[in-house]
Amino acid sequence: MPEVLKAPLVVEFPFTRSLGSVQSAFLTGLRERTVLGVKTTDGKVMVPPVEYDPVTADELRDLVEVESTGTVTTWAWNPEPRRGQPLGTPFAWVLVRLDGADTALLHALDAPGPDAVTTGMRVRVRWAAERTGVITDIACFEPYEGEAAAAEPAAHDGQFDDAVTGIVAQARLDYVYSPGRAQTAYINALADRRTVGERCPSCRKVYVPPRGACPTCGVATTDRVEVGPAGTVTTFCIVNVKARNLDIELPYVYAHIALDGADLALHGRIAGIPYDQVRMGLRVEPVWTEGGRYPDHYRPTGEPDADYDTYKELV
Image (cartoon, rainbow, N blue to C red; front, side):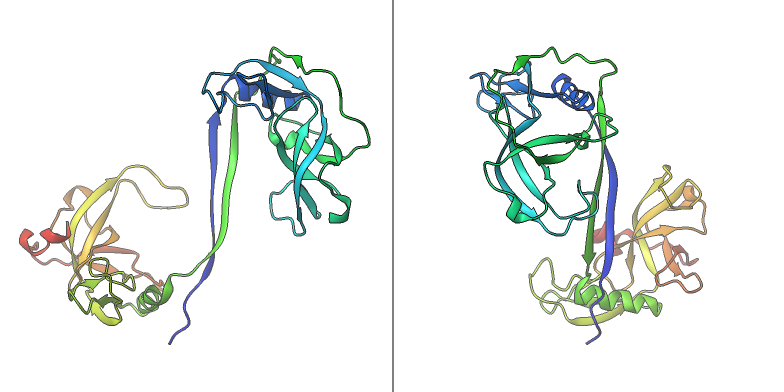
């Protein structure tokens, strides 16, 4: 059996969100080396602050300033920091209840090893040298020998010059993807300019691309069937928005194409014809580029359009 394919993949995008008055005050405060919490309906102080009481759902606006020192309530050692984590050397993830707060804040603790970390140890904020109004303005926590502050947290109006009103979070997921046995065979066949699906042994439908199992009958599919190469446009859309890193002149057409012998339509770009002449029932064939491992696009074959009754079940 051929080796199942696998490849490293990265999904990455910037997530932009606006901030309400409470979160704006909290992040702007970090920029100014000030840690703010919010009082709940029953008088508890939550850090980080939230906009609504988690018990009563009341709107919360009573901000208070807490200390930059605190106590570790629980922790876990991280021996191998990953990309984008607060520290590049081994560190502890800690929940820290800052002095004056009733809830704990999650962050990194810079410690020489797990033996140096204990529940109940005293720590303090180590501020980043450059601060812009994000959670990483707290570079990390570090061990601290001082006692807890006894004073009640002071009220704060949450007002700062040039307040932070929004943040951009860089979301990223690194993972290894494997298409599985069925799609590995499909991808390898495409490299030979063939399109191979699999037939359900029960309902006899041919699925392209194959899924390894029939979604209707729930049984494994192992009988491979070569389909196409020509097919029929079952439905389509006209694309007028340019995609990043995709050098295709706008507008262009993206279609569902039912290859001859297949019982499932696949996606493909239509070219070789003006976009406003693409239609349902249009007969098309794949076009391969030199060295390409899959069809670059589909073009009209010149055959008469397919009758609607021959592909209506695939629309």
